[in-house]
Structure formats: structure tokens, C-alpha cells
Image (tube, rainbow, N blue to C red; front, side, top):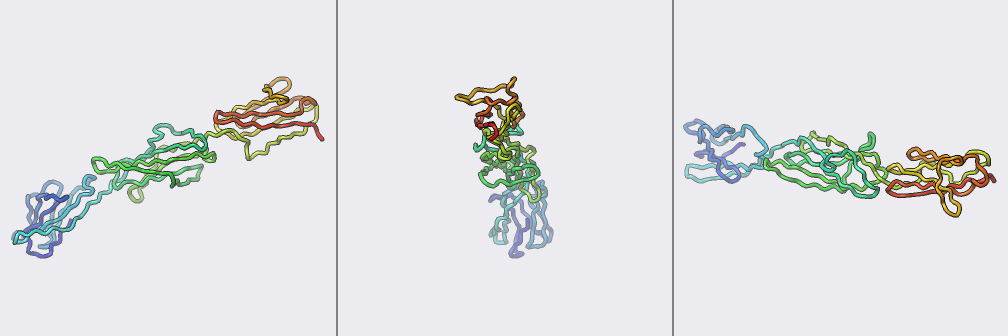
Length: 303
């Protein structure tokens, strides 16, 4: 810190911290640069460049110095004081990490489609307060999330600031399998990333797969096997029930007449050795605990 005096008719310069005298003084005595006390307290040094320019150096800055306001005060031969303007010290303390506190442990979360789920990241202490940003990743693609984000700050005893950032996320089916992460920075070019990325499992009710055509009406000859196929889209993977529907619907199981085969999101019903009585309405009921859906499929004779 440098104190520049308006004239050389100054007896000494005194340093003031946060409005209170430090009782550290310096000046030229018979052309010699002297201090009071001598030596200055540990952690400080001083110089007298000439009769109007004096400096006080803090030898080792730390985070507790952040925000301190310093002034120099001069006293002339008439014992009149003149105080300088304030100089505020700003200390940069880079954060060391940012991490998820919600979820605290799990690396994946289940969220029902269209429901809201909060995620929280917290930084270590830093100066200035860090800026936390949120991202959603899918494969090599990364999308910044800038809405529904709130943050709060907590200043610690050592003057560093903890930042807590909360994202309020509304689940969408298209996000199933994506991951959430956060980044934070309070010093240029130093960006910290959360060590965990949270996998999104979006729970949604079964529906017919939009990407695969499913035939509701199937023409079949007699005395052959015909297979009815249904492709679902759901999470978690659903359970399937095939039914034969006449006046009422009756569950179908694998046996001499029917064969049911299911693998995750695909289910097949094979009607073996079709006869005229086998034509008509069949239903597949799909349920996964989130919801239930069904579709009717009708094999019929040609023509």
C-alpha cells in the first residue's frame, strides 16, 4: 500500500485499518527512514521512497484479510491530521471442489415423468463467491440448464463463501438415461466439476413404441402358426398379459394352443395351428407400476 503525501512538511505517517489505528507509524528522521514501533509487528515491512511517498507491505496475504479497509493518516508540524481515502483489500481464494449434496450418495435417481425433483450442489469456501452452473449430458452431447436454478451463500469465519445451488428439474421421458452434473468457478480459468454425475431414470407408463409399426389387423390362413407382436416403450420394463376377448377377456398362457414369449420391451403371442375359432379379438395388457395400457389385435381370415 502506498501513501502519497501532499507536501514534505509531514512529521510521520500512521496506518489505519478498518477505522482503527494500528499504531504503526513511519517517517524520515534526519534523512533516515524510521518506524514506530521498531521493528514493525511481524508480517509487515515499510519503505520511505522520499519525503512524500511511503509504503506499507503485508508480507503474507491470507483469506482473513479480504475486505479490510486501509488508510494512511499524516500529521504535520502543527499536529493536524489528514486521512487518505480507503483502500479495500480483495483476496482471491479459489474453491477446491463442488459436489452433490442432493442426492448425497446415490449416483442415480428415479423420477416419474412430469414430476419435479431437486438437485443440490455445494462448493467449498472461496473468495469471491463461486458461480455454479448446471448441465445435462446425453452421450457426447451436453446442454446447459439456466432455468429453475436458485442459489444461496454462507460466509464462514475465515471470510470464505460457501455457495449452495439448487436445480428444480421437471422430468421428461426424453431425458431417460441422461446425466446431471454441476460445475463451479470463482477464479478465471479455474473450473471445478462435480465428481459424480447423476443418472436419470425417468419412470413412465407403458405406451406403444412410436418407432415400430404394430399391426392391429392380421390376415392369416388356417392350419398355420400366426404370431402377434407388441413393442412397448416404458420404464421400468413392464409385465405383459395376453388375453382372448370374446364376451369377456380371459388370460392366455403358454400351452398346446398358445405360446407367449416376452423379452424386456417386446412380447409375442403365437397362435399355433390356427383354425377358424382362433380368429377374433386378442388383447395385450401392459403394466409397470407407473401405469397400465393395452391394445387389441385381431387376426382374421383372408378376404
